[in-house]
Length: 187
Image (tube, rainbow, N blue to C red):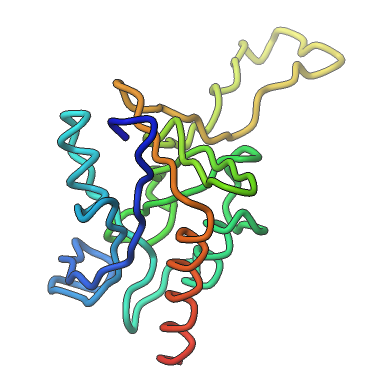
């Protein structure tokens, strides 16, 4: 968002995407996020200089572990199917797996009040399996109490420079409700 007074506009648009592996080669119809008339991935790539090949999990006839309904529910701030930190949502998934099984998501902090919905700290979220356990020779006695090892976690990597979008709450909710209705009509 360039001007703090200007609000961003979210839309869903049809865009075929080339699936790299999940269902073999070929294009599949999908719904992508557009912000201010530009594909989200294109906007983020232009601002950050990084390749951003992420899409929504809304693909006709295909599904990863994240359903389109769960994705839209999370964008509304509802219960989510991912394990990202509280207040953090996945806004984009791998084109091949349509979920986080590849270990990379496009994520943002979600905040909302009566007037605005904000996505901030947008960047990749990477799965970290934690530190490998420290091994000692078999003849050394193990400590009585095993040391606690941090478990697997998702680690945010916000883009530099910071990317934040601020949407009018009513318009944001309308875009998501329109997409929910469209999906309901196709099922």
